[in-house]
Image (cartoon, rainbow, N blue to C red; front, top):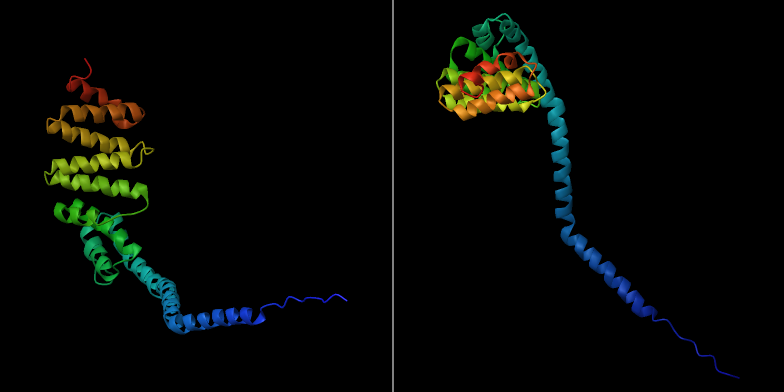
Length: 231
């Protein structure tokens, strides 16, 4: 009778390997569980804090800022620019809204109103200050703010800076066939006054080619003729 030979599995070796893996995992966790939990807790706190800030702090601040500004906006609409800036006995103006509710969207918008108000009052340095500090995702409002900044620089006699802002305003929203040709014209006119004839011609031609139906395009040939571009 043949003797059956059985191949025994190295059970003890496998068990030793598994035990070694478990021990290494336990050792890793004992070393790094605390830093890992601290890191996870920090992430939770940051994310939670962000949402809590937006809901319980920033949200109410925006409401308060908007409530504070409505009367100032009414004064602005009727050209009472000093009251719009400084407010009256019962309501704050744009300047207090900016300082009191810093960081809110309403306070940012108040900078636009403040800059525009100062421009109307002839305080061009303050107009520059607030308009430079204003920014928005609304291209139409940003075009207007940039154009007003150009106006303020022009009133201060800073023609180079004014031309730069006018050109920026004139190319920011090219589908706008009212503001774009207007600011391009102002840039061209100022360039002409600085004897930058080639630059002025280029800007006038851009109005004629891109905005042929605009108000500025109707008489642009007069300016091109004056510069010798049209005989």
